[in-house]
Image 1 (cartoon, helix red, strand yellow):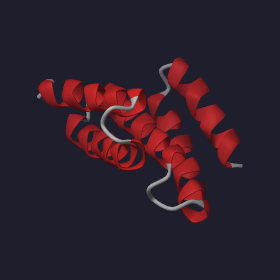
Image 2 (cartoon, rainbow, N blue to C red):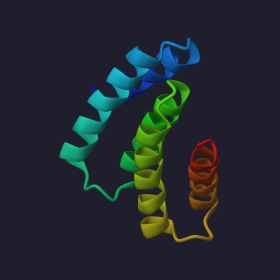
Image 3 (cartoon, rainbow, N blue to C red):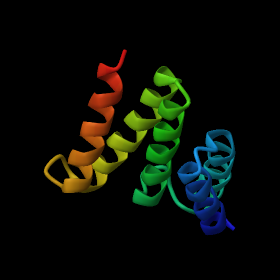
Length: 99
C-alpha cells in the first residue's frame, strides 16, 4: 500500500495536483513510520517529497520543517559527505532562502 501511495503521489505531483500528492505522501509516511524507524532513508525521502510539495503549494515554513527532517535523517544515516545528504542540504538551503 505504501508503494502505491508513493507512486500515486508522484503522478499527482507531475500533474501539479499538489493537494492529492500531499495526501498520498502522508499516507505513505504513516505506513513507513509504522514499519521503519524515524531515521530510515525511505522515511527521509518521503519527508523530502512532502517538503517539496508544500513548497510548490506556497507553504515555505511547512516545507522547511519537512526538508529539515529529511536532511537530518540523511546526515545521521550517511554523513555530510554523501551525495544524498548534499542534495538534501541544497534543497533545504534553497527553501530557506526563498523567505
